Image (tube, rainbow over all chains, first blue to last red; front, side):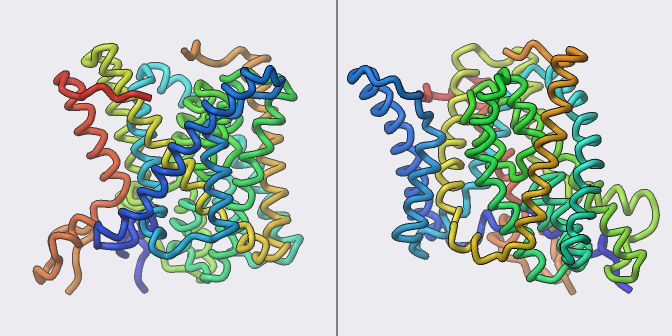
Length: 373
Length: 51
């Protein structure tokens, strides 16, 4: 019997580069840039128009404009196939943005906030994962679809689902269902959480923690955080990266469970093989983020150069937000069917409620946190 | 005969350069690109990037 560890790694982010011909990426990347810039200037135009006309309307951030423009393109005229390869690179720009964002964090704060959020993530995962598995069972979904939804909802969305797919030998239809459900929820969370956050009166720090803990897909987590504020976006990215770092452990757990039932390939025995399994699934961009944070903490960058690297991060995120909109096809999400969506909605509500409770208890009750600046 | 994990050296020399580059993975590519940007910044050579 083959073992999972012996297989070629199935990268969680394999969809980012879909072609070997670099020219095929050009139209899509240009579209990301165009929509991103349109979003950025729409913010400027909207705010200046509102100011000029003395309208009492909220400022609309470039994040929202870029996502909405992307949504409009995909769900009206559609995305021509010439743009697809380039648009799929939005995960690459997301990771560039995250690694470069390391420049805005002192390493000590990363360790402290990472440690705090790790406790919250573990509690969240245990509660939410259990409830999602129970809901999947209740609605008659297959055990493996339940496992995919639980790993996607509690850890890191599509990446966790793709990473679990090979390890638990899930059917392609289950994988498609789970990914569609997670993406649909990401879209809901993206628009719902900032409104709820303002209604509850969360601080930037609290909202960043909440978004990082409860939004499943890293691109949507980043967008949700930045929709609230830049500071909330920074915290959300850090917390989500901590969640992502746990992906190997969760996938290993599900792989061991399904292998014990004889419904997946056996995981190679021994600590070394399992450590290799976890390393294989580990999101390596987290190491880049830590390295950049260490360089900034060591004081090797001038203030001006720190600002430049931070602007590289912002620009990369701009392309990511355009890609989030362009990749959200509402018709495809509706076609998924209601059962996986109901389970995923239960997952989102449970994860959002549990993580909001944890954030409020730890920040307002226990006064955990950092003086994030 | 197959290629090693993570796009490593093939046992039959069958991987092209582009296949090897693709095997690096998007996480490492992002880290490499930002690493170069940060190196330029440390050396004071990164031009002003406006927002």
